[in-house]
Length: 594
Image 1 (tube, rainbow, N blue to C red):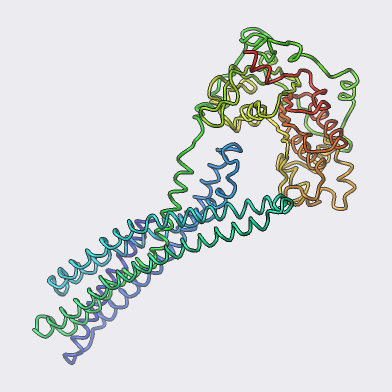
Image 2 (tube, rainbow, N blue to C red):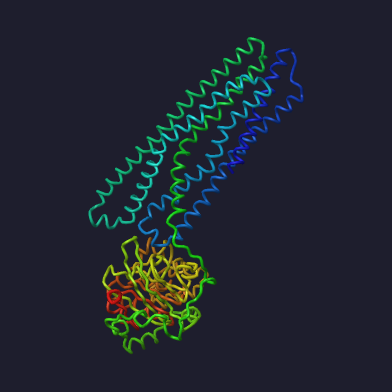
């Protein structure tokens, strides 16, 4: 695109310069009592069309290229965000929003709408002077060319001068965007804490800082325009006019050639105006391009060389036995009963087998995906795993756990011991610093994350519901699901009757983050969404910690239905949730007993 833009600028400049030469010859012929030939008139018309087409196509190309570049950059930014996952983007919502909107837009205009025209503007004067040297006067062209050297020198000097200003502007804009978005997201908390006034004052202060940084940037832009106009435009125009008048007076140039020299001199300085017009885009664009470059090129996760087909499934050395001993399989050496006891009584087991969806429709049987293809292979296994969020500050050290296919294991321990970190490891959001994490026989380090997560379904502590209807949120998991499938999933979650009583049914809006639903309803809607995912391994990250006891009972009943035929890793504190497990692993005891 840059090459095409430069080429079009050259074509337009060369055609305009030749047009001025022909007009000068026409003036001489008219002054001598003649007139321009039909061929001359035709040539002038053709050159005018070429010059106009070059300018018009160049402008259209810049706009089209900017739009195309913006779309591709935004796709690259969002692809990188998805690669980073929840752990890499946590607490960065405002910065990422600013990057995906303002930074992408400014970088696209810089790359597609600035670089080509600015290079063309700097180089076309040399092309015009070449035409002048060949057709009119090499001496005048050479003298004017010496003055043109001032342009890149002035631009280079001012670019170095205002580079810190552009970076400061970019930082202030990013901080303002992030602070404003965070204030909106935490508006309830700010109001309850009576901190809304203080936050508004802080936002106003940040806005004033941003305004000042913008004014400094614009002041630098205006100063450059003043210097270029004073040091270049005025000098070149005066020099061209003086040289043309002197040559015409001495008889070395005709009147028509003198007029052509003056007009071509104006043509020489014309593109320099682009420097001032595009300077703001260039400075801001370079700053935002640096942001995107750091986002796209740094902080990448560890290499995932393998894929689902390339990763080697891990098969234990003997049926039903892990290569590690029983301690590695998740049993604390201090208390094997603490890791292996079954708190669930026969009544709970009977309830689990009897419960069924409350309304029509049927989901796919989970057996195709709901159990490991090889019963000898653990569904989940952590082999001497250590992990940390910050280098030098380990959260997990030497943890080994095995969860067999179809087993429900509760993971308990005090806050901060690393339960959520272990969940992030299993989901592939975090790479272990030591050891290996296996999910259905696949190493999380080398397996394609999409293949890995196709085996997993997760119910989070605070489920995220998208702005839209109940059906829209369910179809996030299965876009092609029929209404019967949606009702069946709601039946699994124990929510079908409540949704059926709503006037709009499946088309009921859930509001932003599910505000129109109760906490229990939102959690059960997330469970219904997971039921549609129909993955063989289920991770429950404290799914009842945000609801009251009545809602907890409904959610636990839904989870028992959902867990049928699946492997379940349950992270929980509440006793009622732990009672549904086949085995309990105390993560604190497991790390202490190494």
